Amino acid sequence: MVGRETGWACFRVCVDTKEETIRASVVGETAEEACIFTDENRSYLWLENEEETRTRSAVDHSEEWAADQDGDGIREVHVNTIEGIWTSLRNRLRRFRGACKDHLSGYVAMFELAFNHDQVTPALLQRMCGV
Image 1 (cartoon, rainbow, N blue to C red):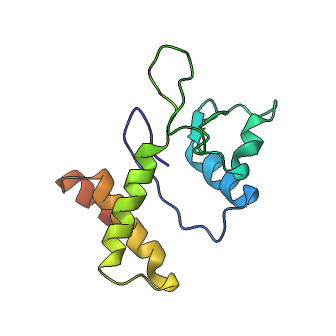
Image 2: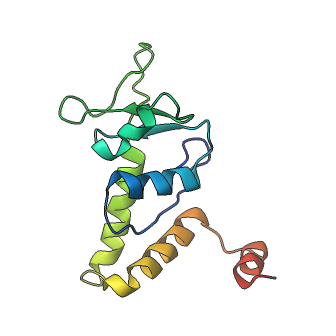
Image 3: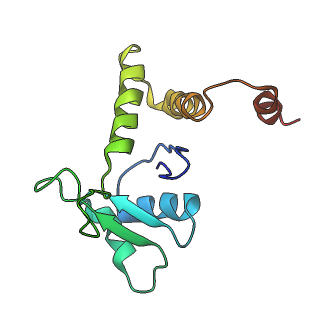
């Protein structure tokens, strides 16, 4: 997941892409009133439930790369940001010729750290060390 306003990314290694797994990640990492932009994957259909406070805007890649939600000519509903980030992660893992499942979460965590913190500051080091 990546925040549109903050640019902050959150990555999790999941065992599958079933609805229950996706729901736990989305609920755990987003605000209750968030608007979630997704592709047409069926695992996100729970967001369209009337009782759900989060909303979903989806783009159908078989028809278009992005959707114009409000008719102003700007295609604001897209998932290109996260798809580009995943491409960067795959490129980083490619030099290792893949990754062992036992170590994948560590590689992903290091990528997340590097993506979200482009500079190593004393404050970052203190947080990492628990000081």
